[in-house]
Amino acid sequence: MEYKTFLIKYAEIGTKGKNRYVFEDVLCKQIKEHVAHLGEFSIRREYGRIFLEAESTYDYEDLIEELQKVFGIVGICPIVVEEQVDFEAIKKKAIAYMQESYGDRELTFKVNARRANKAFPMKSMELNSEIGHYLLEACPNLRVDVHQPDVLLNIEVRNQVYLYSATIKGAGGLPVGTNGKAMLLLSGGIDSPVAGYMISKRGVELEAVYFNAPPYTSERAKQKVVDLARIVSGYSGTIRLHIVNFTDIQLAIYEKCPHEELTIIMRRYMMKIAEKLAKENDCQALITGESIGQVASQTMQSLACTNEVCTIPVFRPCIGMDKQEIVDISEQIDTYETSILPYEDCCTIFVAKHPVTKPILEIIKRSEEKLSDVIDDLMEKALTTVEVVEAKVEDLNSVG
Ligand code: ATP
Ligand code: MG
Image (cartoon, rainbow, N blue to C red; front, side, top):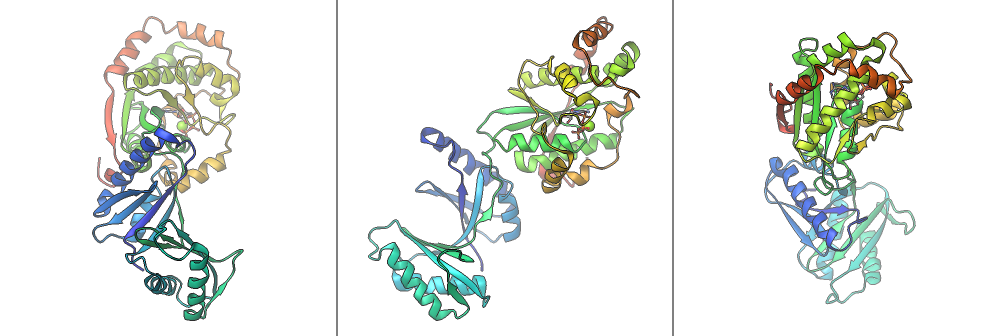
């Protein structure tokens, strides 16, 4: 069966009144952007519904896969349209639809008619039983089950008639652009791309920051982070990735501060820089991939110390998740294979043998005083030498 039209279903929670139009506008814009590279499509809005129409040839699998990346869509229904609002025409179309879609598979079905067009003479119940009757006659493989049918054939009678039976699951969430923008601390690991995906799913646009430590970390490690940003951008839209040269700050911490406190102090400076970049770029929050107890820097005490430098909200969507749960999402969103590439990370190079697991804020702050003569200049330099990469999914397989 070749489909030209798709009914796009979205959840209506939080979309009452004026908000609903904003939400729909943004969703339509998102759909347009996502499908643009797959062919010519137009979007029609009728009675609070969104229809996507193919105006050219396109690849069905590619289109569905792309629509499943658009946050805000809960279901995608490929529909067939009958132009004539006439019983005979609907009957023929229903039979052809069931035969083409399901062949001679032994299935139970139920017709679910909805008559929105009151000029059509038959009531919904009547249409259900009449179409059901003719389907049974035309398709010996079908049986009726009104309680748990294998196939629910929806027939909507409006100015045209829509027939559909399948709803393909969408990503859910809210359309990107309906809930502000946040700065993701993106490392090359498994957790932070998942964290970015999860917050973006709530309608939040993303920018990202990566702390690079050349020559201790390689060009390949940086490229891996660019690639991760590109994969996530397939859902969130383009991500401006800020690459911060963190080497001098790390070296200063390494030289002047107690080694068991290295990670925690380093994380505090990362958060400070990330917050500055967030504010400069209109981001209202930070996002990290932290999860309670995962490593020494993610105990409750460590998280409290890290958090203390931030004045804007820090979202940690993985905070209560087990590693396996995070891995499952990373596989589902396709970041896993890239995340596990074995390139070094700046945190792992300067890591102490026995990091503190219960840091005390006052002690950490006292250690940081040892940096006081250099840190302002180093922070300034780090911020003025930021490299920005526009990460777009379409550049994923290109070089550089
Ligand atoms: P991930 O899998 O996200 O790397 P992780 O388990 O390795 O997480 P940590 O290295 O402790 O955990 O980092 C915790 C969080 O701090 C990361 O999820 C990320 O948000 C941020 N982070 C760590 N290193 C960097 C970096 N080099 N650049 C940007 N953000 C970083
Ligand atoms: Mg990491």
